[in-house]
Structures are given as C-alpha cells and as structure tokens.
Image (cartoon, rainbow, N blue to C red; front, side, top):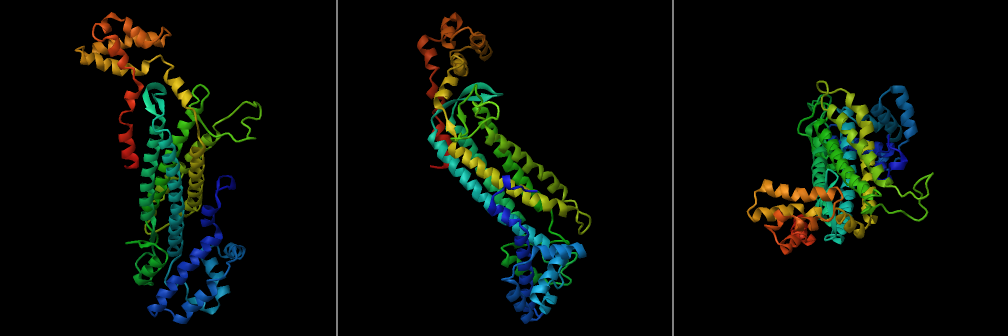
Length: 435
C-alpha cells in the first residue's frame, strides 16, 4: 500500500476512508433524490437523508467495527448511516446492489486522481519547454548503443521528452474519459428493481457518463486501459530518468541533478554526488507498470460478476495513482533544477577527434562519383586509426591520397562544420512547440 515517503497529500486524500464513505453517501443520496422524484420512496425521506447525512462525519472506526461483525463493507456503512439518519434510512439503497456504489465510487476516485495527474503532466511540460528553449542550440553528442553517433542539441533531447509527455497527456485524458462512467443498474444490471432514470440522475450529479450496459459491475476493460496508460506514463518517466543517470556518469558529466547545500551523497565517501532522484524514479516507474498486469487480468470475471477484481483494485487504485503523482512531481523538480554543463558537452563532442563527421565525408565522396561501398571503406580506414589512438580524423583524411583525389583540403574541412547538423532545429521545435 502507499507509504508517506512516496505520497503527496492531495491525491492520497482521494483514497482515504473518509473520502470513500463521503462519495458512497453522495451516490446513495442522489439515488434517493431520483427515486423520490419517481415516487419510489417518499420525498420527505430523501430530504431527511440529505439533511442528516450532508454534514455528518462518518465514523470510520464504527463502520470497521460493524463490518467485523457483518463481514460486508457496504452493509456496515449503511448500518452506520442509519444510526445518523434515523428511520428514513430504510429507503436508502432501494433496488440497488453493492457494486452500484462501489464501482461508481471507484470511478469517481479514478477520475479525480486523473485530474491531479493531468495537472502534474502540465507542470512537467512547462519545465521541459522552458529548459528545451534554454538549450535549444547547445551542441551535444547524440549516442546510439551508448556510442558517439552524430551531433544533436541538448534542447532537442528535452523537446523529445516534451513531445513524449504531450502524448502521455492525450492518452491519460482519453483514459480518464473512458473510466468516468456510472452504473446504478441493480443485481445483474437489468434495472429490474431500480429504473434507468436513477442511474442517469446519479451519473450527472457525480460528473460521470452512464455506463451503456453493465452486468453487476462496470466492465473492467475500462480500468485495464486506465492502469495500462499509467504504466506507459511511468515508462516515459523512466526513459527520461535513465537519460539523466547516464549524463551524470563521471566519465560523461554533461548534466546532473541539483545537489543542495548540506546534502550527502554517501555514508562512506564524502566526495559522492549520486543521481538518487532519477534512480528513485526508475524504481517508482517499475512499480506503477507492475499494476497494469493485474488490472488486465481483472477483465475476465465470472458471468455477471465475481469479486476477484476487488482486492486487486483496493491496492492498485491508490498505489498506482499516488506513486505516479509523486514521480511526476519529482521529475518536474529534477528538470527544473537540472544542472547542465555545455562545456563538458563540447569536450565530449571533440573527444573522438572529429569522427562524428564521418557520414558527411562519406556522402561528399559519393557526390564526387565514388561508389558508396568504396566511400564507406575509405572513410572507415581513417576512422579506425582514430579509434586506435592514431590521431586526428581530418588530418588522416587529408593524408589519404585516395580521399584527396576526390576532395580538396577545403572541401574536407567544410564537412567538419558542427553547425551543419543544427540547420533544422528550428523546424523540429516548431513541430513540437508550435510557432
């Protein structure tokens, strides 16, 4: 279950017993209003339910004590409400089943959690955009397989992350809409004891849509998509956190997490500054992803309903949303305060003696009539000497008579222009951030 170390109060409150019981009461009271309008229960009873229950502070310990005896959470709650409301409470829950309350409440909680998570993503997007624009044209090495490839900019790295989390926002918005449904349809979903008008009234009052067809439960494919979406968002968090971890390695040190005054990196080694935040985010992301699998297994319930999903959701609902909220906030703070070292980026760019320009030289040779395979061989011959510590790439190319037969010194040097690689950065930024 969620622990304070990785919880923030606003989202944790959504999953508190007090909030859950308050939502249960609102569902029951709104249903009573609708039934009263339809003449199913007395209007005075519905009025009394609201009057007595609206300001009531439901006693969690009392409800737990009743549940210990009756072994049923909704019955325990209704029994306690009857102690508060009085005789009119007998009209509550008329024709309804427990899942009408439990499922509708769960979806209210998931939508409220999604709203907080969407706000978290907005904050992260703002931080990523600010830092991307700050380092839009800051040269750095692009890596494939962890090996130097060709130049890019640090701003492009952050723009990539911005676009990824913009997609995350769209997916989470869709998942929120998908799970925001209400079912007040009775024992097996036939509305035999409670008419559809009651469901429609409760749905509107709780900010939900009517579930088109339910059995005794709301279909769990909706929830599977919701938790799978949280897992994908967590994967995006881990991808960016992993990038920071790599960039902070001592041999790279192109960026690092902010290290506050008085912070300690190691109990043994006073010199250490470790990427603890991004490592922590990697672990939290693993946990959020882990909740997607049981959510998918919950889809296959027996017939109209069983409760194999119930214990799962009591854990994954709060755990996944609270953990993801914490992770998004932590990642936002990390990006906001990320310390960037352009001078080290340049140093690393220069580290291979110009090898990062090998493709441009190869293409230049093909444009002079050299077959691509031969051009590749000519360029690679000098490149491998540089790898072996044999000198500067441009110098070696100038000394190669086969290369010089096709390219002059000036033409070779022109292919070592770092700025050439950044001529379309503005175009990419326009695609990501707009005009």
